[in-house]
Image (cartoon, rainbow, N blue to C red; front, side):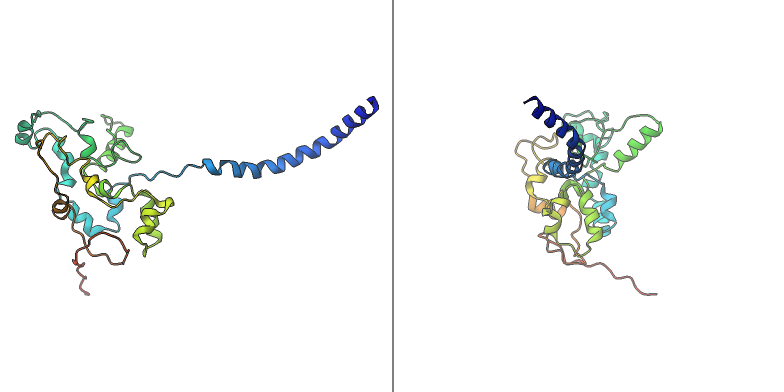
Length: 237
């Protein structure tokens, strides 16, 4: 019996290096499989209207003229003083750092890439944060269309993209089709500027209060209602 145990011990000792080598070779394969279910999808981030302007220049130019583009300014002291007084607000107060107001006067508030209250001061770090914040002021493209980091990159590589590809594909998720529910997140009776009987007129406001809906150069098979307005062709010199 003792002789058998001795032989078994010797055999195990002899095979140990080989078994360890095999386990080292197998481990990486298992390591590749195990995290697969745990891989987190990259969250689409807000990139600001300037990124959208590169391809949607006419829409961006039109949007710049809307009230949506300038709503951040309403939070500044002295702006719309009469309306603020009537609403019971202090017209001399600076509301640009008021977290009650910022969700509806900035883009992507509290979300990746979105607006963040910048620190005061003139240090390099403060100036950088202030510049980033300024780029997300106002109700921009992504407030209605969703965070565009994935979509911007996808569209650059696929000029003839289809709307469903952008909205539904997991790898470029984030883009949305604006609807009434999205608008009423801010256009509702919690606003100090409207009374309890206020009702948001979605069909009317989407035509009057947003950017011009220009006819796209490519057919993206999207559900948006685009006007027949066409880009003016530059005259050849």
